[in-house]
Amino acid sequence: MIAIRRAGSLGEVRQGDAVLHCHFAFGPYQDPLHVHDGRLRVVNRVQLAADADYGLGPEQDVDIASWVIDGALVAHSALFADETIGTGGLHLVSAAAGCRSMGWRAGSAGASFLQFWFLPDEEGGTPAQEARPAFAGLEDGGFRILASGFPEDDPEDVGTIADGAPVVLRARARLLHAAIPQGEGACYRTTPGRALYLVVVRGTVTLDSACLGPGDGARIDGETQFIVVASEDSVILLADIAAG
Image (spheres, one colour):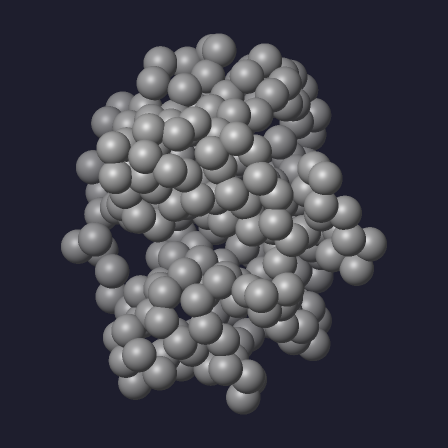
């Protein structure tokens, strides 16, 4: 089953100079029809004005992945050194047992980014942060794993990551990215008992005869495979999480 969530139907939350468009209930935006999707708690598109800051906290027992659509961000928190993330880059903070505060500050040109909140499989633990640049040279039109909690996706070597290896989630989940050229398609396969949530970042795609544009989302349940075809050069993000 595929349920389409149009960009125009998303909830809107304003926090200072930040504007959030929310696929699921978040803060003052409450929607009993869109609470969350499996172990995926939040999908928000955040727009920041120049030099503006978006802050959260305290938070615990959640993995927050932020993927930069445009501009640059400086991620900062009470526990970690600042991380600068450019367009196409990913930042992950695992709040674990608790992080008093965390925030993302835009550069002088402003910034927009997508945030995905994953509920971990186990509570507690030590907070952690990771970041990756875009690694555009790895794009091949298919789905590439940006973040994963599956051991088989985890890089074996430690130290500086120079090959686009995924950041590590504390949930058995994946966050994936696909840059699909016009007229081409990308196929994704998963296992039974999973829930999928797809967000179109740029371009226009067709999914099971439905046309999706920028900002649209699609919840895919009970399917172990789908194909998305790009009507124009398109970028999409996909979360693969446990359905329960």
